[in-house]
Picture 1 (cartoon, one colour):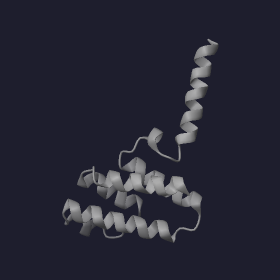
Picture 2 (cartoon, rainbow, N blue to C red):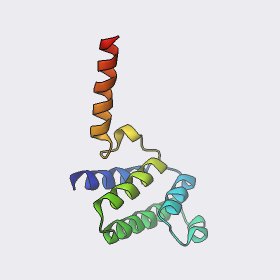
Picture 3 (cartoon, helix red, strand yellow):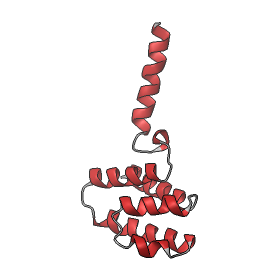
Length: 106
């Protein structure tokens, strides 16, 4: 559960760092129905709407796996690095160890 909350915070943080085009892509990933209306709004308004929409969707999803998948998808859309995703943290550490092991073997 901690990873989900951490991922959601990282997604919200990235919302504030992106330009309008990327925010619109994130809104599309979230199946936001009024994309055309979003295009007429200011960057700040878009950020707030996408943030609220994201929270509503995440709260409405029962499955932790589905929440994880959606948040991770939006995280990557907003330019988040897969290595920085809390969901992939453990996998990333494991693959680094495997790479180090392979280097040591050769």
